Length: 352
Image (cartoon, rainbow, N blue to C red; front, side, top):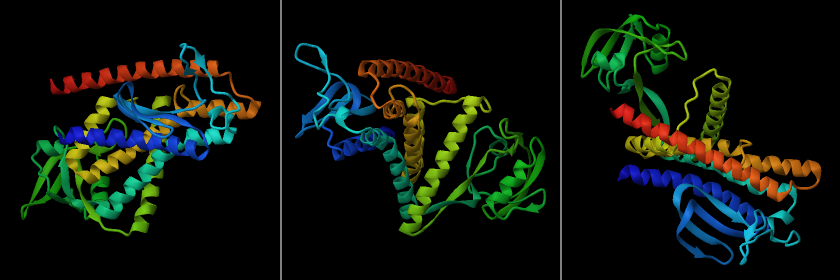
């Protein structure tokens, strides 16, 4: 039940904050918003506001705002019609920079959400830092196999003191596929144990399968805001570099779909609310970046068309642009189905 609520919370927050960005900037630019929806497909519930219809739809894998004049509407005769270009509330009547601000507002709000969530974690829970003790063990790895316990402290490696976690990990990383002797303190007892490190395939580092205990240090609201911004920039840079390396083939391409994301959210919820908020911040950055890619049907593609409009002095024909977005949406749906299938297959294989 906790996992289900966490998944609904995270997906709902990510989608609604993204669409809220589009919604608010459209309203500020005098564009009429016809519908604000969470999800796709058949309508489950909804109500009509002063100008906007608010709805929850059956497939909770996204959401949308429907802007007056942006796409063709269906009239009473079943014909596709565009809003009059001279209508002051029409999206098509606005300047290019106004339309670009509406489109860019969704991804920008995802980055703002990430900063805010990280700030909450730092301000309320504190700054997470690595302690000296073992916080968790990876099943099947050398440390778990020889019986190391969560809470144990590694005082030295091969006789060299390891007073902090950085010193400890650097010592392990420097010895791939080697036998090392750990001086371990646990439950008031100190003993030496020997194990064989593994070699990480991507980095070449030595690994034993341990993670540090996390200690939270309290900080001020101002420092939390600065750290929130800093962490958002760091994660954004890391994600961009990782995606670039995947595209160029430097690292294996591993893409997770909705099932993998839901599983990660469930695991984050089990680790505590601070972990869940941090994970939500990272997912929000990923959503913001994804939507900025020039992929048809995503915000980045619409920004490209608006850039072309600005350079040409006139928009691309609506029917042509809408067709490209439609094809892109179908392809994205196909990719999502394929990735979801792989996620489910991995779950069954791992449990088998």
